[in-house]
Image (tube, rainbow, N blue to C red; front, side, top):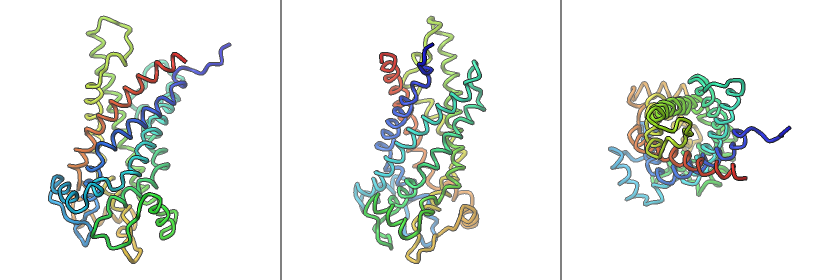
Length: 314
């Protein structure tokens, strides 16, 4: 009897590698918009140390003029590290969850099981990477107007946070972060369902009945799928991102955080900024994440296509 593991399980490392490559490509291209988005999100207009920006273009121009390219790429190292690890783990956990749910089923997974798989993967990734996102947020918010000693880099930020605020500070924003699991769940569920629809439509007009679904789709299809699924996820979950960013700000010179917990953020934002406050920075967020999602899935799907034949030839 053969002891060779099932083919799908053999491809687990390909999913992780493709996801990591996709995450790196995404951050490298879109990081300046991420900086702009974060600064908009936390600027509540009430004594913030951040400069005021009129819009996304004005923010990019102002940051470039006052801080140079370094300002636009503030927090780039934790951004790359966090995104690469996150996407790698996400695709790995997501694929593992789908395998587990499909083990006793011959038919395709239902939308509900795709949703459960994505939510499970997102929660595990959130717990693993929250400290990296805290550091990234704080580095992105450092400006010439900052009142406290700036962090000199990734390691200094981790060390300073641990010394001044304790280990728990690395998990600030974990509650809205876990709620943001719904973002990935919505995105991946939409992606899978739209993907099946496109494959079915192309299969009907394709003479090769048994052609692999991967061969029916191209990079344009992956770009459209990634962008469409991302828009749906952003519109539904963006307020959680604002809450998380505001919680992850560095405390002022007296060591007291601006916001104590998630509920405090929600109350203060609703009181002073109304609904608009929960959608601050959504324009650069859409500009960053919609094309970024297209890039991510183009890279992921094409790297996976390259790796699968290599596995078959081993």
